[in-house]
Length: 200
Image (tube, helix red, strand yellow):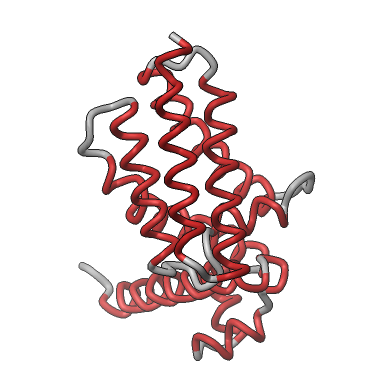
């Protein structure tokens, strides 16, 4: 027989885990993953510190879960909207357009999660750093794969440039809050797409 009490506790634990991970991901774009404390999460979520520890076990596990939650949001906001487009240059354009709207819509209060955490965790070790590094690598691999399909002979170099444009646009948008900086990103990326066939 199904133990309804056990199932109920598991469901409540899963709901708590999702809520805390989501709020931690949101906080990370403003103050950084390192600034996340059990106390600040408890205050923000209404879940006690002991309740957070019950479902996660440690603050580090919360930080890793925040990266995982951010990945799910990024896929839904940036990758999925572009996935119906033709692979290659057209899909790359879709990714840039979706990324621009993701930043413009302030899906995360402090801007792009990848941009914010990549700087914070550069050259560091441990599970949190590995989760951040893995997320960034996954994004770069996606760009490289689409650039290869688009005809780039130097997909890693071109992925570096596109990612750098996005990071710069995010930083300027956070500093000045002007939509023109996101439009600059769009123009820079479009110019990059135009020269891709020249590499073939």
